[in-house]
Amino acid sequence: MARLGMLLALSLALSARGVAICACDPSHPETLAARNCSLCREAEKQPPGVHVFFLKDINPAKPHRWLALPRSHEHSLAAMSAEERAIFWAAAIAKARELFPDGDWALALNGPQVVTQCHLHVHIGHLMEGVETDNFVTVTKPEEIPVPKGEGLWIHPQGNLFHVHLGEQITETVLLR
Ligand SMILES: [Zn+2]
Ligand SMILES: [Zn+2]
Ligand SMILES: [Zn+2]
Image 1 (cartoon, rainbow, N blue to C red):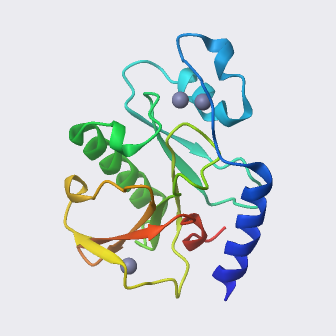
Image 2 (cartoon, rainbow, N blue to C red):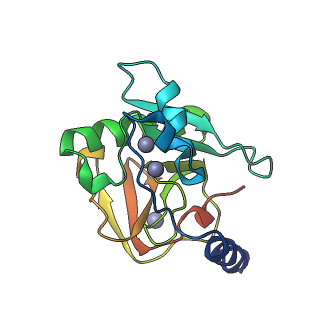
């Protein structure tokens, strides 16, 4: 029930804010000034040669939440090569393991209908209890994580394996604040 309440609150907040639509071009920094492009500006601050970087969630109500982001200006996983996706997921999983050594972490990618920031970002946090669903595939390594098609996904460890849950738009509600 807690998740349902958060889903409703989040969908109201998202419908009020609208979905990320922008025409940003990193070679023209002035085009990154839009609010939807603030993560693009964070990416530009990273040194060259970095493939993946991490930001602590700036929302004080979410003190244990982080974001994993590619340094390159990706808007979707589908636009990346299989190798880039594997590097990205491996780095995000390594960061989650470092932050939550007890193994009770999850990664959450919101779907394109609800995302408000144009730059690809995955939420890292504590997995809430009682959110398990039947709509998942089991993978053994980052290379096997499927590419979402018009949907979000969330990932959590299951023994030595990972569950990848598909078919939802609002996924970050599986994470504790
Ligand atoms: Zn943008
Ligand atoms: Zn960007
Ligand atoms: Zn699961």
